[in-house]
Length: 382
Length: 165
Image (cartoon, rainbow over the protein chains, first blue to last red):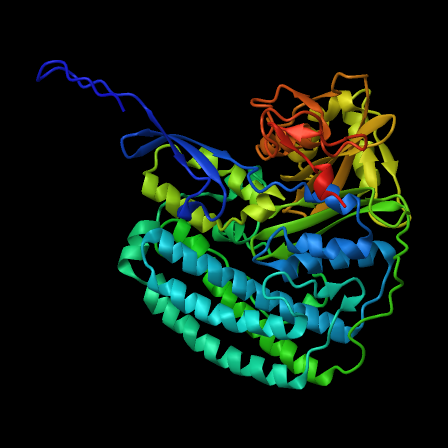
């Protein structure tokens, strides 16, 4: 910043200073670069730049056959691979009319809810770090580790699973693992209570997040924002309830909605709080799924041919991922791979809304806002 | 729902040529004349009955003769979704043009930038139509079917013969 002093009592001339936050920055949760024009501590303009993790996954998928696409979708949202796989699998199953056995459906709901908890735990832990609280991160990763080890024992991978395949899942869940998960659920509910006193009701945390980065309902609709951010704005919109896919209609759970308990509706605290309540509800779903899993016997996958026959046509399917609504738009020309493969990424639309609310807030509030959006750059850039 | 929308569009906008593409499998769609895309989107968003208040995605698909854009829009009020399609003829080296809908939904801003970057469609009236995922100096449109990656980028050889066995 160039500041010129003209005499002692003359006006101080200042100009805007451009600061690059990212692409390598702990608060941007990946390789997001935000070009900030600052007027002292105040953000005058913020321009998000993306594309640092662009791998052109859509082109890769168009050159692969339908079964070989599953590992690619894993690598888009690497914190919620199971949900990405589930969305892809049910899209192809609907287009190709492939029936899935009930046990596989139960396992799918089970793993995708576990993955939702794991993803929200990362959001919770790293959000604490953004605000300046390091301890919650350690507790969050301690619990996440248990989920990851469960995934490791069913699929062999700790982050990228290739577990949900077209027609079912690739391995069964044994009874020992079910017992282990029941123990995890009981322990995790106590942990959630601890998080509540540790961070959610913390005075400093509330001061930093309430009334910050407010996005109201109409703003969210205009920018196509979905997921916890939309629910944080007070809209009861969850595809698991509104357009139930898989067997979500058989489960009993509530949709978390931001109510403006600590500030106004749609602020950072609300978005954070929606995730915390969602974890509670996910535990509820997992418990019901475990009961069903004990009852349901049978196959965990249907026999699917090596090359899947998908008829000519197109389909667009949306599912509720931890970060928002994930959509797959697939155009098939009847060959062994898709002709056009398009992913509607929830984080892409969520981060596009950042530029408009940023002007006028402090730089530290911008960090809080980016954290509350919970973006994963692997999915923004694809 | 599709037949109602086709009727509404044909009644209210002259020359829109809305047609219903009924699909045997998968999702049906509605094709419209690209010249009226802004009017169509405004009408579908603001007409009291349909209220498509969310733009989900704008995606392009490359065919040998033409590009096909799909505007997937959804109503979070009526819980419906719709695929709108337009066909843009290719014109040699220059990019096909279509009017931007970024005044209708703000989400269109980035989605159109992505479509321009990946498929190569020029959106007239877009506030800031530049590349978003690829770097600014990138040549070509990766999701076109005739796209070939370059031999070198910024002096670095791509897939050198010595390493490709």
